[in-house]
Each structure stands twice: as structure tokens, then as C-alpha cells.
Image (cartoon, rainbow, N blue to C red; front, side, top):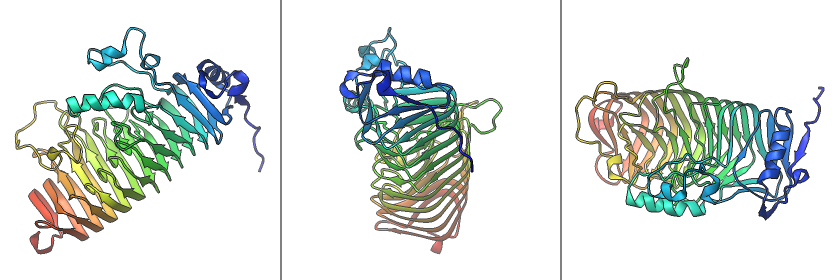
Length: 422
């Protein structure tokens, strides 16, 4: 086999980066990125700590972080805001930004971020006002920069690196195609609000494999907030395999599903101490069609709950009462409202222990969740599995063991395979 030529190396230290964690290396790093752009070369970070303001990737480039190398974001709000917006404007709600991601790039091909090093978002300073704002107004997300946002990239690979302490979301491939995220560790404290690990947004052909995800919000959240011209489904053909989910809000689809999501496979994953397990979440006004979703060979320990398929998300999470109790509305939505539709979902070979509820399936009166198959499923929990507004639910070799009440609480649901009707 004949190998191609070695890629040209653009060592950031050769462009003037000090890597001492004190002096700003932004200009030197950006010069290296600009020089590498379009060459198929590699921007190399030797061991050291490189303090930087936001950076922009160029096409056909590799970012390599050697062992012992940390690319560290500044935590000064002015570095991420437009010149005409002050941080005080964000805090008082008079403006929303936009805030620039630490690493960004648009309309690129062949982008690789790999190595044994770390990209650190320096999020601690940002989380304090975000949590204060959330406590003041439940469900509110204070604008903050994301760590990495790459938009309309064809052939994206992120492998081996550690991403940590993002002010908000860590890794957001947006409208990307052919994405591989492999062997990545993404870390943030469990109390750090909105620190999603990986959020594929309107992406196609994505593989997330052998990653460790330990954050303060969704470990993975597949989203599509709008329809994409020429595509029946904005988000499709996504596989999550062999991943470890630690603190966080689990494996999610939504809450934005308007553009449509199909062909999602989640397999051979473990969950421990997550606030949710498997979750599809949306609501009137954000909803669209979600179909052909498969979950298999899943192990969960101390999750709450194991399953959440809800059309009543409303910015809440598992610890909020409205998660498990639908509003008392059987009315018809207004014309043109975006309605969630979930169908053709399969859960097989799952074993879970839950702190409280076993699970919940909550469709809308006008949009029942349909064709859901559970096979070889064992859930041990304190409270019942609630199924409301659903049809075509099949239970095959399913055991739900609870400490209180019957295993299932059912309302307006068609279910096959119940033992003794409960």
C-alpha cells in the first residue's frame, strides 16, 4: 500500500505562541490556522497551555493537541460579544448577543480535531450568573458562548481529545454531514447549567462512539429547530454506540424537532447517575416528526427515569413535576402550530434501576405516540411507568418492578402484552 505525503505541519510555537497560560496566544494561533487553511495540513499544539480568545478554523485543516497541550479559552465576556453589546446588557436581558463560540468555522470540508490534549472553556466564571438567572426564572438560559460550533462542514472528525468546562454547550456540529466523534471525553460539573456535551443539530450521517460524557445537561441532544430545503428530514442517520453517560440529562432527541428526525440508533451504552436515560422531548410550537428510533443493549444505574418520551417538555427536566404529569388540556392546537409526532420506536435489551419513576410516555391528545416496542426490558423503580396518549405500544418480555402502585399507570393508551391488565 502506498501512503500519501505527510501533511505539512504548522506548529503554533513557530508562529509565536508561548504556551505559558499567561500571555494571549490568539494572534499566533490564528496565523497558524490561516496559513494551514486549504492545504490539508496540521496545526500542531505541543505540550503547554495556550490562552486564547475565539478562533476560526479554515477548510481542509487538522487541529492536533499533543499530550500535555491545553487550548484554554479566556473568560472575559467582552472577548465573545459584539462591540456594541456589553455584558451588562446580557445580564439584564436587554440584549441576547450573539456570543462568538471559542472555536468556530463555517462552510468547510475535511476538518479534524484530534490528539491527547484538552480544550478548556474556562466556564466557571460564566456558570455563576447563569445559575442565578435560572433560579430567578426557571427554564431561562442566560446567553453564553459555546465551546465549539462548526456549521455546514462536510467530513468532520473529533477524536481522542478532552473537552471540558464550556460556558454552555461543548460540541455543536450544525448542519454538518459525515461526522465522526470518537474516543472523546467531555467533562463539566453536574451543577453547571446547560453544559450539553454533544449537540448534533440538523446533521446527517453521524457516528458518536466510545465517548465518556459527564456534564451538567444533555449528554447528547439531537436537535433540528427548522426545516432544511430539499430534505425531508433535517436530522437523520445518527448512531451513538459504546458511550458512557455519567452525570447529565441523558440521551436526548429534542427539544427542537421541527425539521424532522429519523434513523437514530443508540446501542451498547451505559448510564450512571444521570437525571434522565433515554429521552425524546418536544412540545407544541417546537415539534416535528421523529421516527425510526432504536435503542438496544443499554444498562442504567441510578437514573431518573429510564424512559421519557414526552410531547409536554416545556423547558422542564426530570426533577420538575410537570415532566410526569401532562397539563389538563384536551383541546385542539391553533392552526399552523408545530406538533410533535413520535412513531416507530424500539427499545430492546435494557436493564435499569431508577431513583423514582420507571418512565413516562406522554403523547398529545391530538398526536398519540405510536408504534413503540419494548423487548427484553427490566426496570426497577420506586414508582409506576406512566403511559398516556399512546397507541400501538407492545411489551415483549418486559418487567417493571416498583415499590409503590401498579407497574404501569395508563390513560388513553393501547398496549399489548400487559400482565393481568396492569
